Image 1 (cartoon, one colour):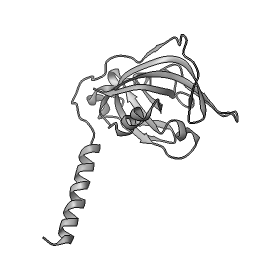
Image 2 (image 1 turned 45 degrees about the vertical axis):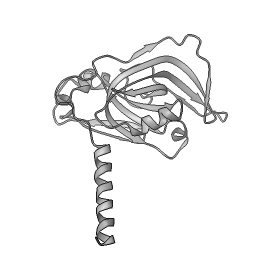
Image 3 (image 1 turned 180 degrees about the vertical axis):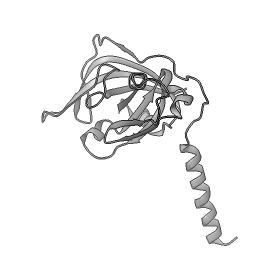
Length: 196
């Protein structure tokens, strides 16, 4: 076989493999992540240091949710801490029959949605989905976060945090799921994560 043909087939095969690995997970109609995120009192958790930033836990946090969108970031001090943002949905926002009628995207550390007609009330969209800035607690968690695919149902636990640097820079998590706009995202120190 000619080496050019072999090279072409290799590139084609690699591309097909990458597409297969990154494809969206389809579940069909029905809620796949029923429960609300669980937030609790912090108790005795202490300040942690990650990449030169001090992270003060504000609340314990655990979530089972469907991945609506995922975006990796490489530039800026936020990317030093949280290289991945996940837009997550639970309850009605984990139902493919609903999500098929909502256009979802991410950019500039925000999650955006658009509808032609509301498949569920606007308030349900806003209170059953969120963009979360994911700070990996270790290398294994970071690898898992970067490999998450749209449509997967994930489960993770950790802390909602406030990040501070010595020069006065701060990044503080929202502590409620019913806010929107600037400051409404969760800043999460992820200690454990799994794909269900």
